[in-house]
Image (spheres, rainbow, N blue to C red):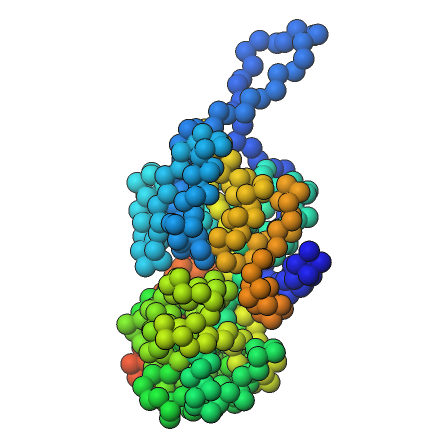
Length: 457
């Protein structure tokens, strides 16, 4: 427990400057109220507003967040919820390739799901601030706020104090290498297994060794869409140490010497391919199958179950050992990893009963004795230290080690920057054009301008 609390405290310190401040507001409520038509008798007790009766059925849409993308793992817990509460749950399993389109279409048609699982960039910066989500501030009491990592609370809270994401899990996004292949290429000295840190010089030497040994593409700057784009962002911005967004999250800072130099380096590097046919999931699949020797879209869930193939911890299809690493930096010490924070939100469909049932679902998964199981399914780290008196901590040794080595390098959660959805599109289009031979400086400048125009508008 002490170790887990220490991890959370580390995370809080690392990210304490990362997210927007939380203003103290009076919590809102979804309680139904009845207008008084008669003055009560002087000796009559005040009538309290009645809680709305919870609906008997809700819809829950889940993006593939860690193990929560696996129906076989999730269904038993959802069935248990139904058995204990009487609330039927209709689950839809979303894919990142078209999940946003499905949700946005449902919103437009007035048929949004009651509950959705994903991160702050969707629940807060997109659907929440645009008026589609229920403010969940009334679900968080002082005990909850003490038990949940402060960084996760901030990431789930809008500038006006409205809480649109009830936090569940967090992780540090990193990269990984085929360590068996690295050994065969004679480059194992570049891999520090005790810290998982390395320099740009060590990284480049490893790519060179793998290319000379195996040929083909060692690693891909995938840019077929936004899926897994956190990997390319972190690889590129860490190389010379830069930020991609303004400090107040009002816009984007791509047109810097650091990012332009990083892009120029990778364009010229043998073994690196700007691949417009891949997104993050394709990269992982090719890595798992041995076609790539390094990946940039990696986290604890992937390490525990590569490509969700059920093969066990940290092995490729051929049994090669997978080693997770921080992204390389010039000094080999200051790597800053992208943070992943996920939770549950409720779409405001105007039905108090369905909102009440949705809150029951969130409470069951995020703050009850069942939260232990919910965290184990995720393959991530629970944002809580306790839930209804139950200690929450990783039981998997690999996850404990991952937290020890990766969480201290967790960076800011900048995905709440204004115009984020549009900026993601500009990012992968920018990479596609650069990979096809466009001038790096001019291309970066043009796409940054479009992203900032959208953020300002």
